[in-house]
Length: 376
Image (tube, rainbow, N blue to C red; front, side, top):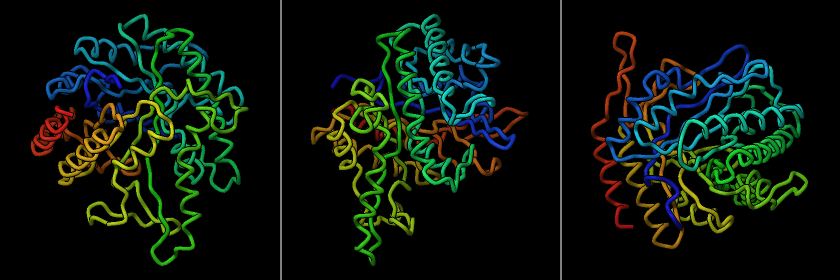
């Protein structure tokens, strides 16, 4: 499989925008990536990364049916100056305040936004663009359904499946709108890669655990036309598949107890096996679209992830990249004063500016990880 990106390693910048109850958290602004984008991009080039994942902030761009791309233009300029390839996410947990995501009009509004954004990027940059229409369809559906993300549909029986179908329709419409402008554009769909097992004392729950584990594939099955053909899915929409993977992505069914990575829980499924499983299911290019750990565990985590990717590749599973997310540290969604210390760069406020502080130990482990894959 040819390389998906300009470099195997990618940098993932903060992009989450949470809507709800009059509160909005724009992570790009909170981390000051919007005002430091040129230097942020130069930094990732200095560590051997020439591809990044970045977000287009719909809520800043569309107002009253008109489009203002002044928030996106500096990113395009900075990427061009740094020689970076960008994979653009068009909807990352945020949309204009006047949109009801359950309404039929949401699909047309999103498609129009995708079309106009693709046009702007085509007019202001070279190369074949790469887009993620809607980030983490499965995760967004779950988060809204359990009531941790606007529009808070907890308690609405069946609303999770209704929303997932709606987001799939919107993503398909977005793909077609993008291809109207740039037929060669690559499309990336991203969702978490998870593993769920029955509690040790409840082997009778194994079928239920397996069913919940299988649900992680529903969105991709719909997009690819493997399920619910009425939605318009087709294999062409599953162009590139990104999987997000963190230490907490494996747990027990019903109890929700995590299979702790730091305790080396023997029930954990090796990532190499998980990657092989999803590749064999869809047979499309895959990459790790998000991964990181916190604090002193960052280095050990990325070395282990790299070893698992190396094993998967050696066994015939073509993994096209690993994206460090976040590349610059970020605060917690629920507590803006708590920063996770999960980035390659930590931050330190000085005179109102969030200064980037390279975590030297993590950077050393990243260099080891980079060398592990050079001969693969």
